[in-house]
Image (cartoon, rainbow, N blue to C red; front, side, top):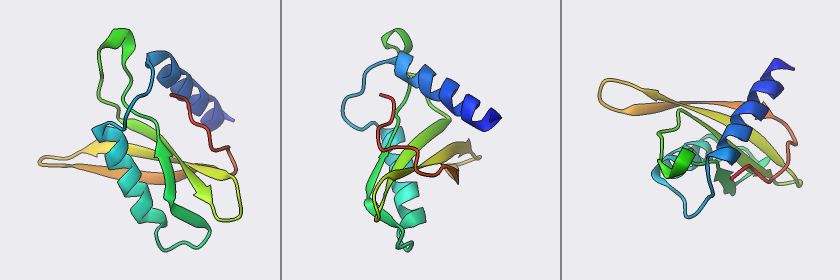
Length: 109
């Protein structure tokens, strides 16, 4: 229950942060990481991945450290994956985990 509440708060913050447009660099990085993760799993369509972007409170973009990606299931519906962006000394890596099964295919802006 705490995970769902935290997800809702995070997603709500992203919705309040601003409107979406074209895919930003953070979204693309997270999407490509999730596509790689599910590429060999027949339960998912790796081309059916879309992710939340950087928050833009008061029109000032902030670097996201948490991205939620919806991944289309081959049997219908979408699962949500949590992508944590982890900065290392010379690069950024990701921690990806399944956040919620059959959570819906529409993400907050």
